[in-house]
Length: 240
Image (tube, rainbow, N blue to C red; front, side, top):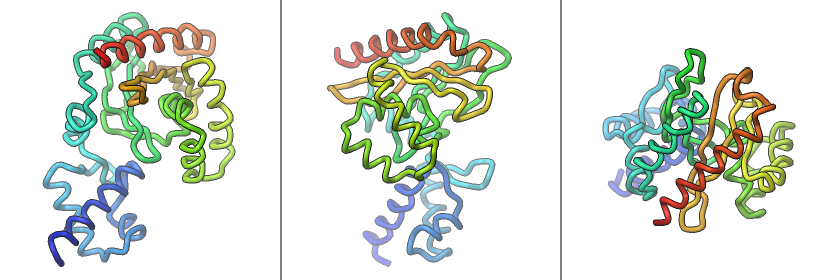
């Protein structure tokens, strides 16, 4: 096998893991025209070089080290300090967990998590992914994309009632400027998110997440205005 051929196969595995969020070796073999021994070898190489990492279910996901590099360098967000300052301020105001997430294939990937101060809170980790249609961040990112991009994502997703409801909601998200995950990703947990822009493009979303008893429907407008305020603050800082 040539070095170029090996590189292409390794990159195809990495691209597939980015798109799907996490995959086992067996699932990769089913999806790509690779035999099991070659797949094991390439996965091992990707893991050894910190492109991917194994999770508790023995599946592989994008490594935290790669996420850090993408966030700080490749995607050129320049927003570590800005995010931390804004997120800590929101946490002080709400007490809830704050997320920053980016679009990764058909998933939303958490790039920053500021844990809330309450004993009961959401417990996602940096690098974890959610399907776009289960995520407030996914809604607020796709709501501001073109109709053609929205259609392309719709074609990639399963034609379920949840997906139809998700795309039906995008116009309301566009109008309000913020999105709500009403226990769609996890029972008992709600999330309110707004988009972050850079150079005229949405690069991420910022969200408040917590138990539905605290991040309740009655506070959606208040929390929506809060995440919109801080998303504007981060956006303006990125433009300077």
